[in-house]
Length: 392
Image (cartoon, rainbow, N blue to C red):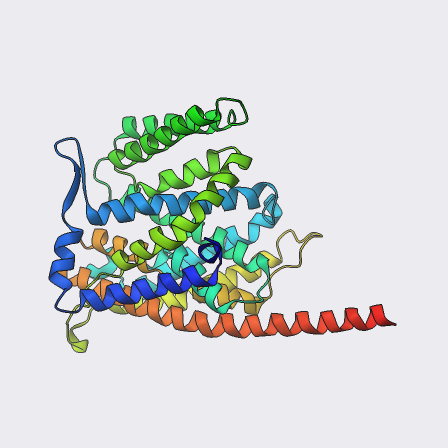
């Protein structure tokens, strides 16, 4: 279990699972895998989902719960526990949304492809943190916290886009019932220190499942239920739940999710036939994210600076921007929704997401490795100076 609680090994598993998904999807096994993903499982006539939806809406909610617990801790007791500390990732996230939209529309304005402007706004938090874990040994913890907050904000923006722009009918009664379940979950979690721990835990699990199901039935992306539950839960029980779930999320949930998310056949089209749906996403993910996150993050350094942990260097923000360009999963979902009525544009946008995310991943690996080497060197010099001072 300790291996699955580490940062590097689960990240390697995640990246290998994604690579396997791409290989399978573009091999002779692709059609069979697609049939499995679209097979329906559940209670017939009551609650049935495809295997693909169980993975991306169900299992992924557990990951978002774990991430939300970590974010809750940072917001209350960690490096984001004040408005001024949280301001930098919030401003950077705004840049990471607005600039990619502007870049995309620079290619697609006035064409059929313009409807795809939300596609490059998302950050795939699982892949981004995976790259950070593999290449980022020695980076300051502030960068991981910054990226965590940034990616969650990006995903929430993506989910809002899905709910507002691409949901025909939101069932507000179901959504309200889900909110009630989340509130009840949060209140009850504060009673876990009593003698009735076991029955309360059982009720909490049932309330969590109910909140997830109601969120799904409301038409809103169900993973937001995981975020809401993680933020609502009392902190100490939440941290314990995170500790219990972490190896399962790292060793099972994320690899399965990465495989399913990458199970996409690369569209076969000629280069001369590609539309702005491809080029807009291809450029907006790596370039738009790097420019938006680093520029807005740099601006945020000048807003309300106070005593506390030193702000991230601009070069660290460049690395975070490259990580933010790994849009992948949510961007693929936005591609399907934005061009649901046009399979040609949907396929080209999918190709743009895959290519743009891979470019961002490569850039992120280079920039993160570079910054990690720098911070390790600085730490080594500081340690040597400290030892020399102690010796004298």
